[in-house]
Amino acid sequence: MYPIELTKPMAMELENVGFKSLKSADEVADLLNKKTGTTLVVVNSVCGCAAANARPGVIAAIKNEKKPDNLVTVFAGVDGDAVREARNFFSHHIQVLRHQWVYLKMATWFILSKDTK
Image 1 (tube, rainbow, N blue to C red):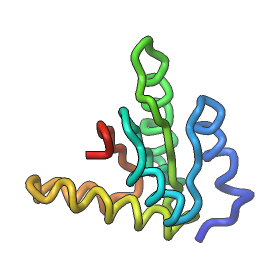
Image 2 (cartoon, rainbow, N blue to C red):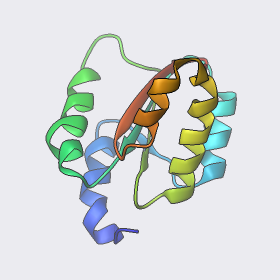
Image 3 (cartoon, rainbow, N blue to C red):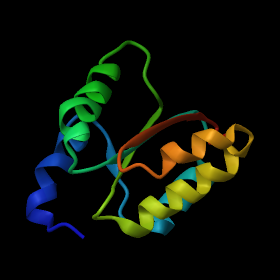
């Protein structure tokens, strides 16, 4: 687990543009099991690809007329239970695309869902 002093600025990059940080498995389960509309889930990370591409890319993507109804994030290496819950939730929904499961094991990833499907 990374120290919060290290990761807080990285988490705030997304929080400052409207993402809600989910810290526990219960928060993730509650949100994903009850949400309607479109939800963008971002697994944030300290890795270079998150800093150079993922966070700037997702921030640019939501600066649009049309954006997801729900913007949420969990932080790999910080919110371990929340990240596991998000991965588990979506792994059941994408079993048809077996090769896609590999991407859910990476540190940084995004899922855009409608009515959490």
